[in-house]
Image 1: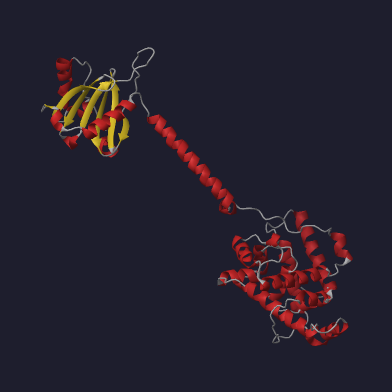
Image 2 (image 1 turned 90 degrees about the vertical axis):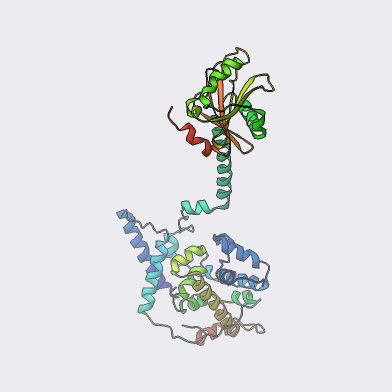
Length: 158
Length: 254
């Protein structure tokens, strides 16, 4: 959500601190997803206060059969930066979807989206990410370092 | 990709790449339809590859110290509505309802059973096939035929109950049924109703009359009868129709 480990840690500590206080007071919310909801809200709050990503027209390519090979070449940090650079609610949808912790209904509840909205956001994100992968990791090249360089050179929507 | 509805396409687009996370039935059905399609396989491979990279994102030591790897989302509570929508529960519910229905039907049927029911049903078939010409023409009040049966045929207690006593008769007769019992048959003007008087069922061992109280309904081949036992003799009023045709008579106060 933030693409920044220290900030993420800050949010995590704040959430856990709040949870501990609530538990001590016996005021745990009935919402079983409240911890994630709280974390998401805090992440959005922090990211709104920081630098905002520029809105830009993203290219979109159909999901490639060899996309998994391209993705395997990614550094985890690159993915984190790409997702954190996406505008919300797409950012929340991507972060929570790829966390592989939630069912469809839970995702909708957490992102406060409808199924068609979530489907559209995820579908667009896949195609945009594929376009970026195609630009960064062309199929006919052996690229590892160049991809990272292109990532740092403005290939990201951040 | 197989032909999908807009709704199914939407579900496929946002279907979790981990099948265990798909709890929605409609989504599961949509995923099942496209499970062999290349496009969906590419989407799944794409999502899984991203998820594996996401999983590799380093978690700060401070966080891992706090949390051991485990489940951070409480298992969803199943609501009554969700449980009731489960096809297994629905199937069991229907089966239980059918069994309960049969049980209730049998119980009610058993409660309505009375001694002499078989004979009453047989007499309903007699009523269905009877012609007025086979009866002796007797135009009087049904209540007065008790004396007639006693005086002419020596049948004591073959009395018409008060509920039917004032109805006008067309004719009557006495005949022996298949068991050799003497049966009194009366044809009434009202609704072309027929009445039967016959001996109540007796215990095979002791010979004692099997008594029952009140009026009991019996039906056979679109004919309905209402039967009462008194002094060892059963009286049955029979009419072509249902219970509603006889109910007004027996609801009269004696």
